[in-house]
Amino acid sequence: MRKLALSDEILLKIEKPARYIGNEVNSVYKDPSKTEVRLAMCFPDVYEIGMSHLGIQILYDMFNQFEDVWCERVYSPWVDLDEVMREKKIPLFGLESQEPVKDLDFLAITLQYEMCYTNILQVLDLAQIPLLARERTWEHPVVIGGGPCTYNPEPIADFFDLFYIGEGETRYRELLDLYKAARREGASREEFLRRAAKLPGMYAPMFYQVEYKEDGTIHAMRPVEEGIPKKIRKEVEMDVSHTYYPRKPVVPFIKVTQDRVVLEIQRGCIRGCRFCQAGQVYRPVRERDLDMLKEYALDMLKNTGHEEISLSSLSSSDYSQLPELVDFLMEECGKRKINISLPSLRIDAFSLDVMGKVQDVRKSSLTFAPEAGSQRLRDTINKGLTEEVILKGAALAFEGGWTRVKLYFMLGLPTENDEDIQGIGDLCNKIAATFFEVVPKDKRVNGKVQIVASTSFFVPKPFTPFQWARMCTQEEFLKRAYQTRAAIHGQLNQKSIKYNWHEADVSVLEGVFARGDRKIGEVILKAYEKGCKFDAWSENFNNAAWMEAFEECGVDIGFYTTRERGMEEVFPWDFLDCGVTKEFLAREWEKAMAGEVSPNCRTVCQGCGASCFGGGVCREEKDGGSV
Image (cartoon, rainbow, N blue to C red; front, side):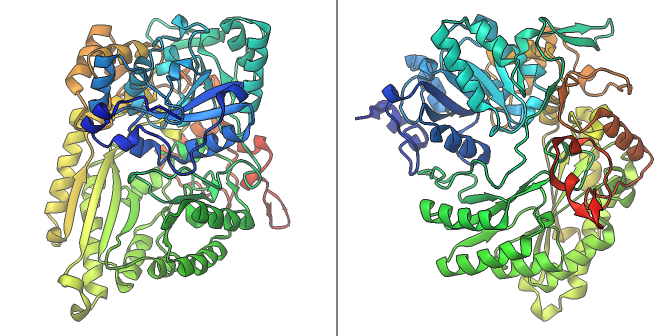
């Protein structure tokens, strides 16, 4: 019988003990004596966030389909249990076996957002694994990172043995076989990592050396040995309809952030918003087959008991068979009294008609993401959304019974000026006015509309046209937020508009991590030693400790955020190849500065480079010929 790693006394003392006991529906248990490789998939945040991540569910299912592999899960213990584990020296454990992570072969950490970096160190520390990769031996698991933040892994390179660049379905089997062979042969840990570094998509930081110029920018990054690749291309699963996807996802005991069946309908995005990293690095667009989605939707609903299903993609409206899929789900889910969630839809007549049928309009709200207040700035970021379209969508929504609209904007975008900020207030006011124009008085619920405007602060990301952009300081961000608030308060319909904004200090730190180099690793370690963790949680974020860490390490924040970058500068991530070329990104940056719009991929191919993968939207038949 499985023994829990935590005593009843501890479980009764901490918040939400169900985070740590495992044994959920559809979790996988194997006989350790019949497996050759044991692996823990880690999301370095609290259980409720990690359990909502589709990527881990996919890889967990994939690994456990391998007969010789047992994959478990592990998440960051919340601050209450963190304290107990340190005090009682309890090593971090896998949820399935309840055995120490340090005794497994691999610890695979997903890197979804930069503000989890100190939590990576928390996980390693609690697992009793040396924080620095160079201090590890075969006594410790191989620590491998994957996910979107690996498109600039340099700030955390010192803490990882390997990074997997790209989509996990393609190369893990080869990596595990390489590991088994190395252990059988008695090869050293370094020799295993050397062999792994030669696999496509694998980056082993120990085999690369960074050379800096006097001004602190990078001169070059080179392999330190022959046979190690100079450039690492991301891995892409081109056949997304016939690959791994969980029919039996793990069902948590407690409510988590995404408490529903998630059906990924496509990967990639045709839109080309210039601020969006996901829209670039997940190219080319690949759709899942309609029949496959129908089959998996029914299987997952049957195997989980969830009462809601959500379609997942960067832009669901661009899925070519969306009407057919929605019709199927509405019929099947109607029989079963299952709710349907349709995020990432453009607000048009079709979408509103569908949402009107699947949602309780009295409780739901609609979301628009104009991103910028003026048409000029929307063109700069290539948003592809006009004010006319926004107001028409709002009018259709209000006529359909919606009375609450959420609007998302970004502050600090390149070329932003006072008129753009004033435009946020003006647009909110026009949307509120549209409600009073199209909804007769006798049909207004409670007599009013609610517009909720939220602003985040722009953070330039690698592999986007804005990777060259200057980022605002904390003071500049806050000034823009105050201007936005004033612009909203000055509107005729201000009582119908509520305004929220993101924390500026967190955004600045995210900007450092996003475009940082290996020098940032020392700062992250220093901040962790000062007690920083769960930095994405406002109640735990300690900006003063971070500022001390930067000062003690002699690292200038402005070098990574506000400094102007020349077009010829070598970036810390230039040794990676995501398919989209630097030349294309430079062209898009120049078009942004000129206020020029680029059509979406299905309209006109922009020559981004993603066609090198040989499929997706880049190879669709169009007008009688191949694009």
